[in-house]
Each structure stands twice: as structure tokens, then as C-alpha cells.
Amino acid sequence: DNYAGWQGARVTVLDKLTYAGNRDNLPATHPRLEFVRGDICDAGLLRELLPGHDAVVHFAAESHVDRSLEGAGEFFRTNVLGTQTLLEAVLHTGVERVVHVSTDEVYGSIGEGSWTEDWPLLPNTPYAASKACSDLVARTYWRTHGVDLSITRCSNNYGPYQHPEKLIPLFVTNLLEARQVPLYGDGGNIREWLHVDDHCRGIHLVLQDGRAGEIYNIGG
Image 1 (cartoon, rainbow, N blue to C red):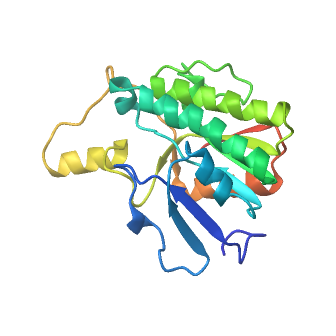
Image 2 (tube, rainbow, N blue to C red; image 1 turned 120 degrees about the vertical axis):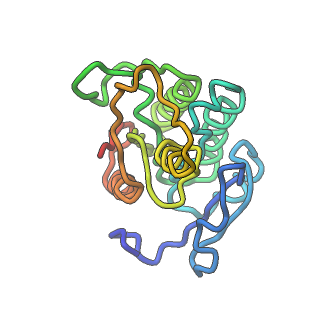
């Protein structure tokens, strides 16, 4: 109800509830929320679920960089094949609007300054590569099939209920337990941080007013 133009909207959440998912993070008793446990790679489920929905906001992804270094296959399955399966279902069920949520990690690293949305894609990890692939898949459904689709690329998120493998909760819990914290390189890298509430406001703005085929960077 805090998002203009969407008061009273009914929301369906599709989530596979892998190790990082937690049903308790959703308002289970809210009368306008429906929760469905399932996989975005399940084409039959998507074609059954999507009819009647006005928009899809596609958050679903394997997203932990360290895990992608140990086993990239699941990242490409969910992030690339899952995106294609979802958008094919969107195409065949008449959903009118899509926001594909991506990451600034598709740009790689930068010595100084900032990226624009036209910056070349230079991913440095299997996770980032899988998201860059998914962005290109999403673009083709706009360009080839005319899907009203926008892409967002956000910086590092933080906020309540974040899984403890992520950097800020990991550092806090490790330090509370007097354990070392993992640093890459010499520890001199700088990250941009974005609170989850601000990220959601940015996605809402793109959902409302974003142009088809456009990419929108969302930073802190």
C-alpha cells in the first residue's frame, strides 16, 4: 500500500524455497498475498500460474558469488534458462509488463568513477556472467517479441532478514563470534550499498514509468 498506483494490488509470490529462502519472511496471513512454491524452470507451472496477472517482477536468481565459484551449473540453469522459461510463459499468457531485476556485477570492476547503462558487459564471476546472459535473453523478448520489458541493475543490497552468507550479516555474525572475516585481495575494494527498501522503490518507479527495452541502474 506504500506504492502509488498499486494500492489494493494482489501479489503472487513464486519461490522455490532453496536453502536461502524462508517462508517466514513473507506476510503469510495477508489477504492479498498468494504464495506458490515452485521453480521458474517449470514451464507448465508458469503457464498455469501467470494468466490474469498484469505484471511480472522477476527477482528469482541464484545470487551468491562464492557459491557460483564452486558450482556454476545451477546458476546458469536458474538465471539463464529460468529467465527464458519465464519470459516464454509471459509471451504465451498475455502478461502486459515485465521488470527483469539484474545486478551491477554484469559490468565487472571499475578503477574509479561510475558506470552508465551503456557500459560494456564484462562479468568476472560465473554469477555475474549468468546474470549478464539473462539480461541479453530478456532483451531479446523485448526486441523480437515486443514484450514491454525493462531491466534494472542494482548495487549490493542489504536489509532485514538477509541470508547470513551475504557480506554484511556474515561480517557481523563472524565478528560477534570472534571469527575472521573473508576479504578479497588486499581489502581495498569499495562497494556501493543499497538498502532493500530503496531498491524496491526504484523497481516500483521502473515498473510504473520505465520504458520498454531500457536499462536502469539503481545505486545507493
